[in-house]
Image 1: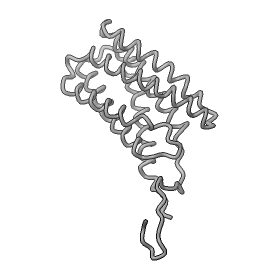
Image 2: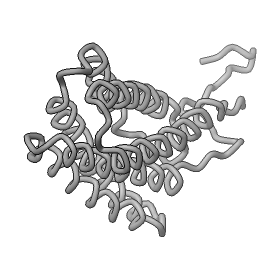
Image 3: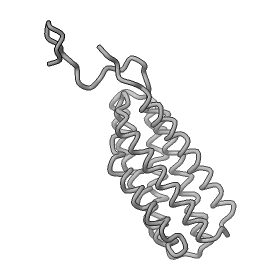
Image 4: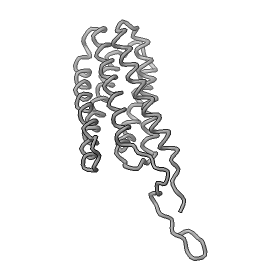
Length: 200
């Protein structure tokens, strides 16, 4: 029986790790340099959301072994890409929109990851709490980002950075804990052949 290729899972896992690190780096940048121009903030955030959304779609269709980390990434990946495109088309005047949109996305991802942590515990993954704790923290920062969108630009940039940093850490913990790649993974549909070699 032909085994499933692990290449999509490898691309998804590596992409998740890279994007998580980039989210952390962007978060640190916004915290350390809160005076960055609104235009640059919008472009950086828009690109990050667009690429991360694409990575999430790859993860969803990769069909990893446990099916935990990527199970909600179809809808969430599409949402992230749409928000990223909107942000890139108007990066100069969307600071409040960026914070509200990204806050909602981060809040939803945190809540989804809380559920994933519970399912991971039921699945027998001992490190499930490494997902739960940052998921709760990320959801809290998402809420703060939504409701504090009217504060000053500097404080808002710092909060945006903290939220992106939390999201990056959460994504990193999730993918490292729940995504396991095996070289001999069986396909979802088992192919059955007749005695004459024809597939049924």
